[in-house]
Image (tube, rainbow, N blue to C red):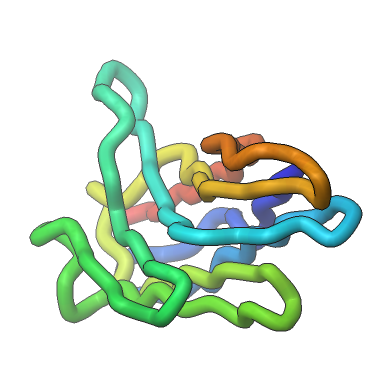
Length: 118
C-alpha cells in the first residue's frame, strides 16, 4: 500500500527528496511519517505529519529536513538538505491507512537506501 522512492548516493552537504505514495482503491490516509534505520541501530522516527499538516521532527534533522504531503495524491515527501554521513540509513515510510470499506491499519513501505559520503 505504501511505496517509497528517491533514495540514492549523495555527498555530504548535498540534498535528496524522498517520496512515499499510498496506493489502493479509494484509500484514506491519516498520519504519515518517515523512519530510518542504520546498520546496527534501532529504527528511529525522523519526521511525522498529520492529516492537517502538523509536523514534528527528530532533533537530529531539525532545520535540515522538511516533511510535507499532498493529500489529493496521498503522497508524502521528505526534503533532505545539508546531508551528513550520519544520515546514512534505510528510510521507511509509515502511515495510518484505510482501504475503502476496510478498517484503519498502520502500514509500512519498503525502505529506500540513503547513503551520504564524506
